[in-house]
Length: 159
Image (cartoon, rainbow, N blue to C red; front, side, top):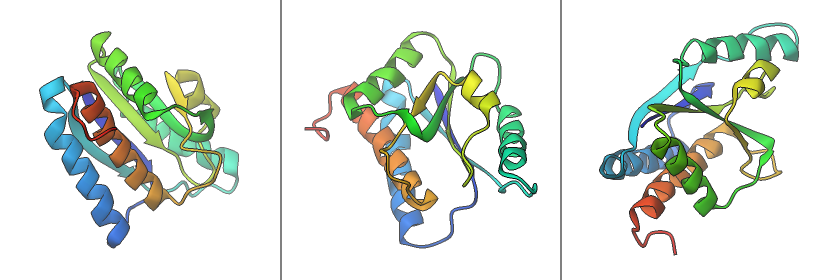
């Protein structure tokens, strides 16, 4: 299953980008053995509309152009489900084992995700009730994808 991260906004050079890149690289190396291929990160510019609803709609439409039929969609949102690392890995494994060919994990803009995306999502996931800067969200997501791959492969990284 190909896994793509879709992010609103650009990651600037710096220690956060280096750390995120390190975890995504680890995931890219460990995933293929268990049927998970890291397809990369798609970055889009933040919406320029006047209102939050219009910006969410604009950003959501851009994401939907990347969704092929049958692609699973996971939205990161503070109001989503708070899963353990094992449960997150299990969800990814279930999507893979259920025949899904692709998964897009979406990091929304400052205004969050449009309702049209929420209606399409297979899972809305929270990294906690706190609000996180997008740079740290990428680091945490990269680490959790790597951790999911190690859990699914039985590697001792997750103890």
